[in-house]
Image (cartoon, rainbow, N blue to C red; front, top):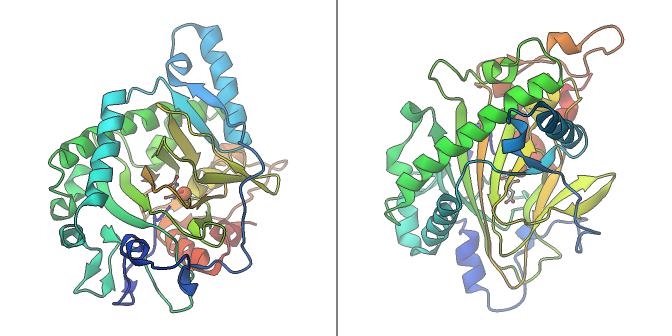
Length: 364
Ligand SMILES: O=C(O)CCC(=O)C(=O)O
Ligand SMILES: [Fe+2]
């Protein structure tokens, strides 16, 4: 998510959660982090989310590829969230990116502040390091800090906000971005095929990707410090991503991500070496509701910090999206109205801070 709204005013005195967590002298958390009415215990059970072998999906043996595609269909139509193996991001790169991210968050606060997401110490900008946008004193805050960077198209990168320490960070992020781009380029045509769209490049075209141009892509590094009262506080509030899809690499030493299914929360299993794919609202809209954008959240942990790296793929903010024409007819009327991506994204942030879901505002 965090394909999010434009600049707003932050409360200048906002400390990062990491600073706050480090300075707590009693097992209390400030009231601004307590999610009223949302006291939550552990999830009922691990979600039986599908595991898709991307190698099989693309292989030359038609029967094996078709069977894997059917598994993918179930994943897209049920959870909207699944794990992928054989994804082409090698273990060394995954470990390297994860530990460089960890090293970044372990840097002294002054060093991290060189990449602050506050302009002049108070005006929030999307890219950079810090807490999420704080737009009102009533907003319930999440127990996480983040580093948010535009990674594609390359020409849109802001090099001054890419950490210089650890030294490997920039190269690793460049490489990781390229490998995840390829994962997305396998999944999106497979999704169009499953919807029997004549144009298998439909989703890629919507993203404006192709002809050497990369889709708008943001990376979000989320750091969730240990939290003395995990039952009262969210690492990240319930939300669905405003993207076409999100590719996530999660901490394999601690869980925390949960997904809503049939009205109950399930733990998303942690499987080392896999990537997690999460469909976003833009896909739910374009597929006319056939594919699902799952509601998910992150819970905190009293003993362990947690880290995740997400890549978010989105349609250009100036474009409009709507259900694909081929998926709309008399029997299946459009379930969502046409919406400009920029407006949708503005609505995302607005709704998130109020605990409502922006997708409901475009449902017909
Ligand atoms: O940290 C995670 O596992 C999930 C993060 C997430 O859902 C998001 O950034 O939108
Ligand atoms: Fe998310």
